[in-house]
Length: 282
Figure 1 (cartoon, rainbow, N blue to C red):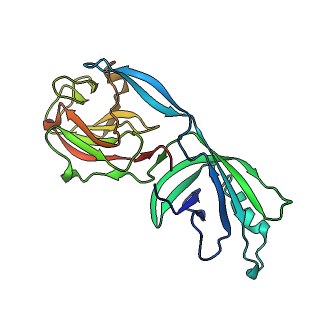
Figure 2 (cartoon, rainbow, N blue to C red):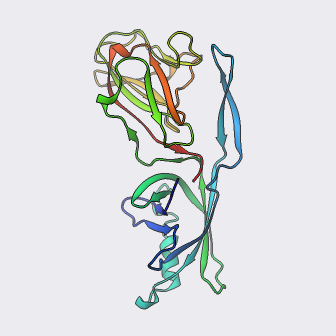
Figure 3 (tube, rainbow, N blue to C red):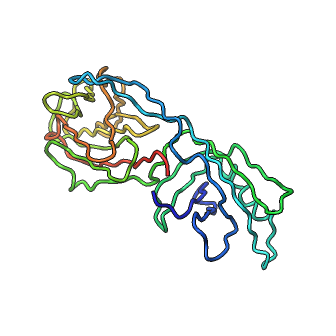
């Protein structure tokens, strides 16, 4: 990622605070002196399955929650009688600016929002008696990956109606889930996603009682913190987590090209498909 600034965002109703990562032509009230914890640290492999045809062991490479530490210099505008305390208080107000206490660190490239990570302030340290006023803020982020704030959405017209379905993500550096909705145009006994039509190494199958009827909608998500599978039948939702085959492995998107085969692709129309890009670090 090529970044120019980081923005602290609590809610759309509260003013953001932006920190430039480049030397500003006009002096900023906040000067970033150091940011720690934004790399990929302590990656741990976690076994989660074995390939059906290859016998290869599958591992989820995961990180523990991140602690991001920002050391910031304070530079009040003395020409308008602004004080160090006033500049510092603006950051104090962000500690618990909403009921959930969450702050999103948004990483910018110019005016473009690249990615964000959500956390809570766990430390706000101020060395009061120093020649150069500064402070240090520590954020605890349960989800250690940086993710695009807004989803990457495919146009329905661009999605293939025959196998294979190839989804390419050339921006992400880490694997991530995906979300989609389909509407059945014919009856189907089940719905399967797999990597190969003949000799799959992994597959994900959901088989609702009675199968799928015409006009049923299947809503699916394997995104972080939002795994769900359910169908809408005459606007009534039916959760299908208990209808997932025991040997199923959730589909994910890896950086680069990803090939999927849908056993019922001729029996449904796409309604939408999206994902959030993911990054190990900045």
